[in-house]
Length: 101
Image (tube, rainbow, N blue to C red; front, side):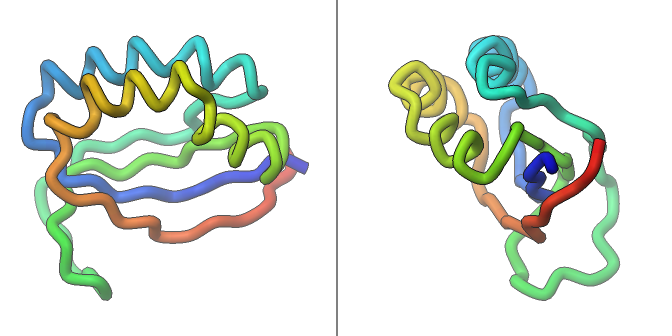
């Protein structure tokens, strides 16, 4: 079973965020990961945590252990620091679950 997270972000710099995605994708793929869904959101009707969201996506890896290893990967952490941190204002983890794909 794959492990997936549904995430909401407030992206404040689309160009820099695109560079983050380009830098992290090869690393994510090494952990058997990818994106199943990716949306730009113009209106949020209900938001339990109250943080702004303008991007929602489903990211997966081969397992929870693979996802944890991906997020701890040194190359990922460098891409996150260089591109993600200055391009994203808020992060909301909407849910995490196992899926069969």
